[in-house]
Length: 265
Image 1 (cartoon, rainbow, N blue to C red):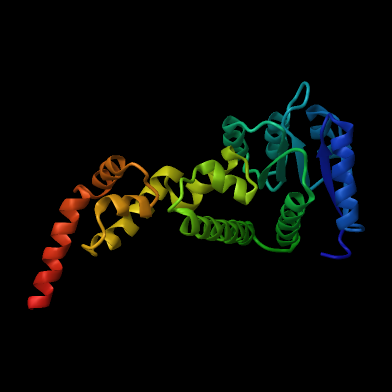
Image 2: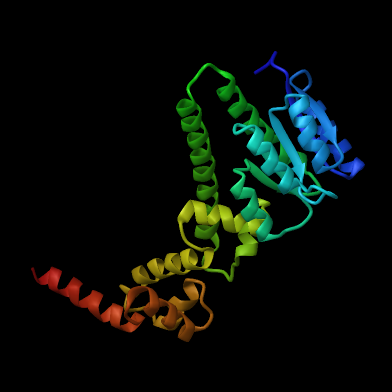
């Protein structure tokens, strides 16, 4: 990529925010990226086309044509546009619309260098793949591969955190904060990674650990409840039955009967 110069549209109605982003880009991508500033969505669409930009970094909340509307227009002009959203608003509706225009990333303001740089790196990698003489199918395969690698990495971090903290009273907000994601964006990513909600996944994870503990008759069910993150043993019983179809006591009896039968055989 060194030696190639790409234009990246930086659209934000706040001059300070634009200046911060331009400074980060200049510091990290001198000679590789040229920032094209825009003060609103209408100007963003115009400059994206006029300056032949390849990447659009768009603030969502701008007067007149907002960032989401500008993204839709840019996408209609350039199906391979790489779109990155910035917003000060943690709204799930924004995240859903960001998905609809196939945005690469959805970042919260104020822009943090440690979050922006990996996203730009990924955009440049995709752009390099796109600019080589390959078929559309080849490029789409690379995009899917990159997205899968990214999701696998995120999924690994999530599982590691849950494995370390499932015995505690953890919440979606705790994991999102650990990964430095907004709650809305984390919900979207989690569903993509595990095809279920955070609460359902956590409940199933805890129940699987509870099953192993139930094989040890020296541990009472109330203690097992606490060991897998439930302070209320009655609630634990309800969750366990909803997932397995039986109560913890019934599961323990059934499991012990199976083990006893296996020993006799």
